[in-house]
Length: 223
Image 1 (cartoon, rainbow, N blue to C red):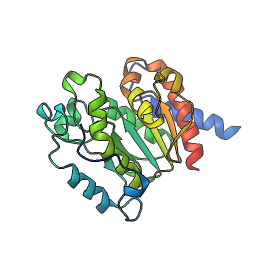
Image 2: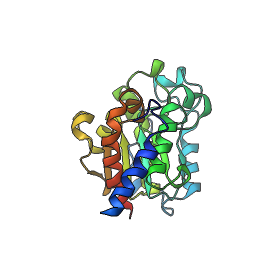
Image 3: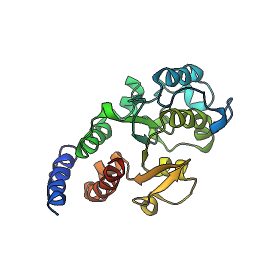
Image 4: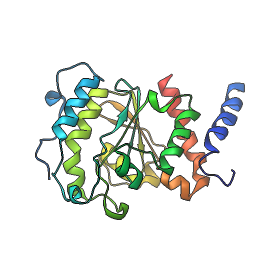
């Protein structure tokens, strides 16, 4: 691997591909029955969820955030990425994964032959926790109905859970990401691949090999 933890992953992916080719909530938790009765992946329906979220004051994070980071991408995406929470760059811009970890996520997406416009990206939390601390259980519960509705409308074929909190949320488990990583699970009939968060890869570039193995599995599932 190079010294640059952002630029090398797609090159690594292309190399391996060539070898392979050779051989406190005020809304109830969403349920399938409570999801809006509109076409799956409807951009207008996603906007309706954002409108329901409003200027959210459902938990303590509202007092310190600059911007709600709802999520963005293709409303008809076959692949969805869910991370933990917005960071400083995301809080400033109102978009998910736009900082250094977001640049690395872009490389990961490109390594399987897609672009960010092809996928949908969101987080478990929609507001930045102070000093990027871990999400608290009540904060996750406050955001849960909105994320569940997003997933229900997009209906991706595969979800990549980036890091501990996304993996535990989707798979309803307390297992650490080191045990979850690479083990395919399901969320309401949707395949879920838990893997390391891009921010972890920036600190531990050697783990990119594991993420690439996970993404090869995801690519195969997408056909």
